[in-house]
Length: 195
Image (tube, rainbow, N blue to C red):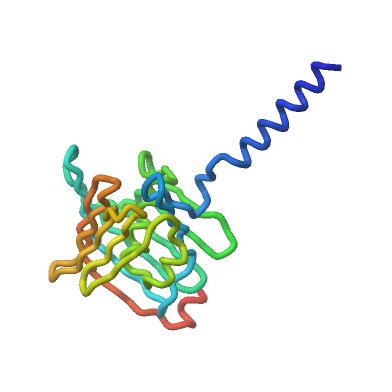
């Protein structure tokens, strides 16, 4: 009888532990240990399709360039990462009321990577008031062509700067830099968006 009680208690503890474990398909992104962003699952402006060239740089690695295409509207956020030759590397889709969906080739198939890409994009493009409601443990500041995320201690952990060549995103907490160049943008009509 004691063995059954012990098994029951252990099972309940494991179930409770699973409920507390982070969900890789949730839309929470840890920018740092103390700053969290809840990703927005819709685009608050006119529906748009965009194609960007993104160059990722980190001091310990060679720079990498990819294309990122996105479809943004009130019903979804869809991003697809492509190699310079057009091969799909990863895909992220978010819709209101559904978990984050990711797919891709290794190592791009990691949900953490997909969420980091979406977080960088949203922190740069989405309206500050909408983002601020989703940010815990920090705040967003925008002055002219610069947008920063600042933690509770006053440290800048993320920065984007718009210049004539595009956008430079410095993920200070993550240790990397992105140079983002908009190659093409297409505004969509409501009728096209519904297909």
